Length: 327
Length: 313
Image (cartoon, rainbow over all chains, first blue to last red; front, side, top):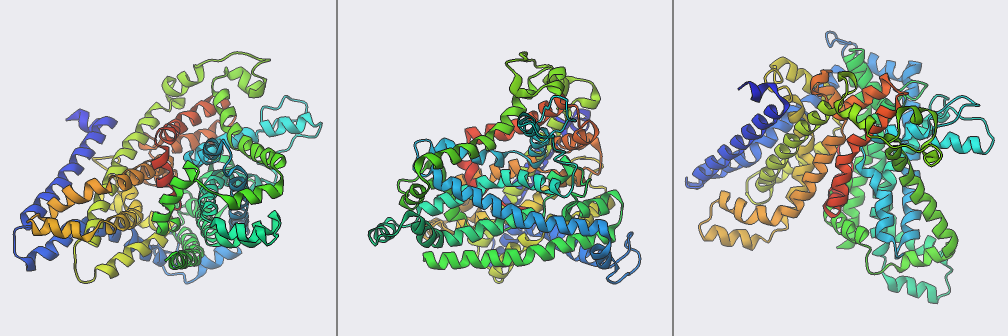
């Protein structure tokens, strides 16, 4: 008994067995219910198959959603109503405003840069002999956690004072060029840009895979026709390729924007949100779990939600449209 | 979570076409011509190098002795030769403050149930939303789909408080982590699996029903086998998502280092001992080795899974 509760493997075994037992029990009940008359069977089946998931969603997403909205209008310990005070705080206190400013920078730059790089790369390696390997190289960072990527790049950005031997790859290059080493992560406002590049490094592979498939789907006869009409490669790219893959471009851009709005791990690992690198999601975490201010933390969560909603709606509408076009 | 998702069918094809290198591609060929083949290849090469060298540098550094990592760059390996496994010995078996092996175990213990549980619940729910017929089904399904819009951040405090109030984690320490990951995975999982299940021809189900098969039989004999590729893709995606997650791991471990995942331990190590590159490089590599193995061995499913759920959370 002790082994099961006091060791990690024990807990794992208990969990898996427990969970298998619950699922087995549900399915056994379902099997027994299969025999009863239709009026009882129908609702019972729905309850058995969909019930557990719906129950968890109600408990873990729907109720928390309303609770968080409510808390954002309450004080730090959720005891008295404070109106919009938390929202005013969020939008007026300078340290919070830095978070908004940086998040804005992140959301503008990350999608544009990753999509741009992904598109250029997809075009360049298309139909080359090494296409498969080349794609894997760009896509690989997607497998790595934000924390892992943060450490990888912190090492690349590592700074040692002038005169010392640089162990960070970037400062070593700068040193070799005879320039002063740069404090990539400490000096604001450029440090936010260097953090953004880490996310670009991760997301470019995603953009590349989607856009590459989309480029391959452009009908060959359209391009052939345009070429016969004397279009230059440049014109072909801007007038045929780009308009043809526009739906995919929009989806990639919005998808990366949504992910960027919630960025948390990179800032936390690389700078700890110091040196003016604060972002919204990290503000939310700090306020709620470090400073115990549930009111302001909840208001930050609501801000993230409000910023995500239009992007998601736009994204879904675009995809519905894509589907119609495709038939 | 949302997004690329809606188009899972096409993104699945995209994954196949994209990673396999499709048969045609005249649009790109002509665009490449405009850049000139030489310059184009050079640009592609530079990008490819920028995208792989940092990871390689980290890996090589993790094999260098502490004094050398701290004093010289990894590219000087030929001038300062010497490879060692000491760093790995220290992060996998050294003194307790720098030993990451228990966090590695934590990550596994968190990941396995946090993958199986949402998968099983979502497959069952998908069955209810695609095969079973009941009033209000479509409305509820749209509701589940809409939940993808809610950012994780909106759910953290109330859900954490619920676990604390009910003492959910007092016997099974990891329970809050398992449940939280399950909940956050469900909307996407149900949506994706429902889409796959809806594509199974209705005649197949009808025929089995007429032959007297109950729902459980249809579920096991028809749906599950046909769904295996979709299930594998989602399982891989969810496993990696949980493995790489920091936010949920930090929040629902309640700050207890005892049960924190590897990512949280690494983030803490970066904060406390930011200059100990011999530990950070080896530790980071230990944390990315599992995703890398999955990447190289199951690339096809991996890409599908990632594309299907690229914006969860």
